[in-house]
Image (cartoon, rainbow, N blue to C red; front, side, top):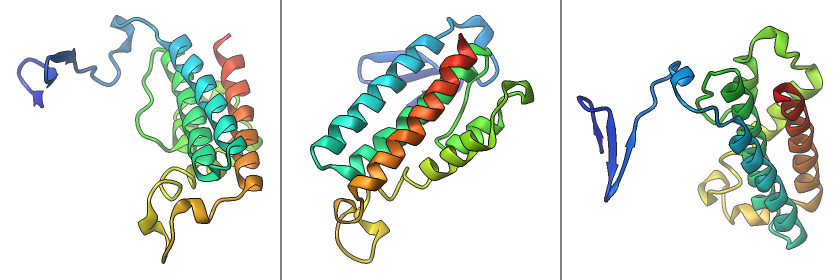
Length: 155
């Protein structure tokens, strides 16, 4: 539950102050944490693929790229909102140097955010019936490319 007057989010015993957009300069910079989690998500994508869970490998790769780009936003004292990697990249300052290769990788990963998880995205069957080893490998490659770009951007 969100209390408008106090700006607090309550969930059971947990309390956290809502972080308004654009006010990151007063908060600790968490770019390294976002990037570290992106790298863990990429590792998870590799494990999921090796175990034959290609839909989860694709989703984890998308998540890895999303978190890496959010690390750049955080590094720049901004805050990326949403889950569309290509949009998060477009919202970076022009001097960030987002190449066409990075944009294309993001667009491919954006298509993996929902359909990889929900059976109602297909006429019948589950996402696991529709994703292949090759698609998982391509997603992992795309995420790796974006993570490397983001790593350079914050170093």
